[in-house]
Amino acid sequence: MARIAKTARQVTRKTPKPDRLRLWFDTFTVVVAGIFFSVAWPTLHITHQVPAAAQPFIAGLAALPFVLIRVNPALGWAISAGSALLIALAIPSQPGNHIPFQVVHILALFALLFAVAVRAQMQIVLVAWVATALLMATTMAGAQDSFAQAAFGWPIAMTGLVAFGLLVRWLLLSRKALTQQAEENELERARRAILEEKARIARDLHDVVAHHMSMVVVQAQTAPYRVDDVSPAARAEFESIGSSARAALNEIRSMLGVLRSDGQLPEHAPQPAAVDLLALLDGARRAGVSVEWTIDGALQAIPDTTGLALYRIVQESLANASRHAPHSQVRVSLAVGPDAVDLVVGNGPGDASVNVAGVTPGTGIAGMRARAEAIGGTLVAAPRADGGFEVRARLPLSGDDPADPVAEPGPVGFFAVE
Image (cartoon, rainbow, N blue to C red):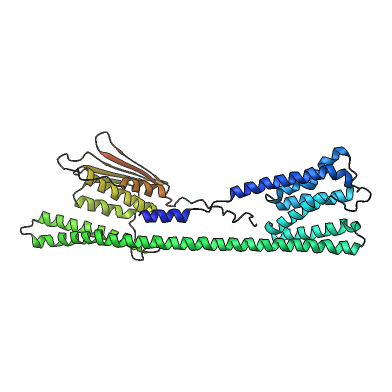
């Protein structure tokens, strides 16, 4: 069991996100944007005719969109490209300066375009590539002697930059696919380890429990023939013991089939339902348990999932009462409501003349509570004031397991490709 728990922890463990690397990169991005701004502002009056009061804002449009290179590169590119077009059209350059916007602005725009090619959707990459190529071809035409040289030179440079970004994008996607494949292989290995451990436990249970239960069945069935002068009452008691042992053996074989399978129920091993409660209670009475029951409502209306949990809770409660409080009076009350089933199983104090010192507490109550909570119900088990014990459970009639939250897939590597 410890091996299964360890393997399950390894299966459910998630790959930690590179938060520390992102923090360092964000810090680096802010520092670079600050350097860009500290260069653009003091040199803006050299390249453009801008009033002193407007220089910080123009420099900010040139440098600060770089901060969005990881968080939202498409938005950063749109701001940078739009401000570049605005500066080229609205702000005149100084005499002798043939570049319509600052070199810092070009560097930030190139970096943002590269990030768009790596991370954004392909439609956005296409729009950004074409728009940036047109922007540079038209606004930088006056910076060279030949318009054709500018018109074709900058689009070629933009195409090379985008192609390199797409290559990096492909490498990141390949790495992500390899990582996912490695995780799937690890999960498969862990699953196989769990199945092997379950098969080993099934073999041990079969060797230990099923063997002894079979011996109980054989002894109970042959006792009237091996023992002389067996009264009719004793013969009926032996038959009851044999029936109970056979039922327990069938359930053990069903559980062994589940352990040996790959997660699917055995084909010929139906689980008990709510309609089987009467047979369970009647069998407990024939086995010597002083039990009374009242059922309010139709057991057929209880779905299979809730019925199975209800059956197991009643079964465990009867077993606990017979072990820890022998010869006590057990009363089972079941009420089927419109939305839920209310169950109360109570027993009085046991016979003081029967020694129960060797009976050790197990995990029955924890198992009953886990069954109830697994289908969205509740269970409370506590001693009573008269020295007895009581189990109260409320189970929903929906019979649906609570939905597990779907984990959001985290990005693989530093850049997450959209």
